[in-house]
Length: 370
Ligand SMILES: Nc1ncnc2c1ncn2[C@@H]1O[C@H](COP(=O)(O)OP(=O)(O)O)[C@@H](O)[C@H]1O
Ligand SMILES: [Mg+2]
Image (cartoon, rainbow, N blue to C red; front, side):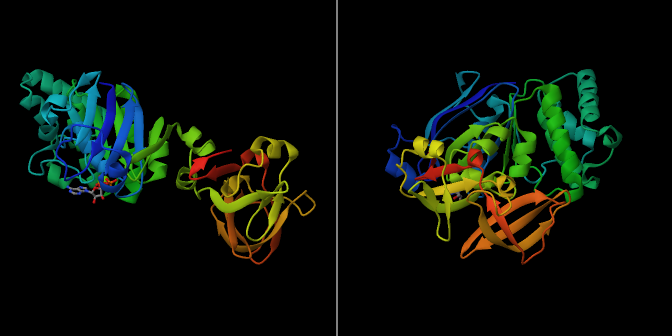
């Protein structure tokens, strides 16, 4: 397994190669991948998270060698492999739709990469049995691959990637897309288990924050071809670098409200809220217009007597088992609050809410300023 590094990767589909790093404006206007620098440690579980069209598949194709970037370098364990083809890089890629040969058995599918590499029959048998055991495919080895479920096929695709001991890394491109919802959970757990057991460098690409956060130890968030933050799931949740991440991570996402600071108060469109002297000092009165962020779980229905509490209407209540999500409004301002199911409230009630300062994040010009 290998460490993977991207160094100044830039890509535009109509630029085969350029000799200098394109300038900022050109990248912004014409490039799908914009000067990306990232590294994934040997044996680590990583995710690349971002909305559809942000360039996730493009990056995977660049890493595996299916695509040569317009500019920049890919390093495998420090070696420059930018000009190498997929075969030489030995990076396996798992796609949205499982790639297996339907007309041959599961055994033959798993054995294929080893046969191709010229391994001995006996070694092949032992290795295929070992991998089938890890993936819970042993009972299907003699079954024709056309007769198994999509989830089983996706396990066979993964098996074909990990069966070779010299595989450098596994890239997974939204691998649960066509999997039956009931089986998604099982396959997701299996992927994680295999990653841990074999200490494989894996990069899992998805637009689904839940998949990314449950799979990876390190998540990189991609927006429009740029990585805006890399961190552990807990870091992204607690300290989002920009409002997009605040909103994208968490369910529901962070509440974001336009506000300004005036006379030691946050001024929102439909109400104001006091700022402590301590926070006012830290902010130093410098923020004119900003985005005020607070996660639903930190908006506490406070009781009207709490200093500064804001009275809001309860518009919608969604019951989700142990907790419920309240959609609250005041004038045109809407917020979501997550409360324990035991919190007694009806649609149409008024509740007083407070915003604990330690959980408030402020963003200006798309960056965290507090
Ligand atoms: N072969 C291609 N030729 C031209 N443009 C492409 C090609 N493949 C993807 N794109 C464009 O590049 C952008 C990123 O695509 P992609 O990497 O597939 O995003 P994602 O996987 O995040 O959905 C999109 O705007 C897409 O339309
Ligand atoms: Mg894609």
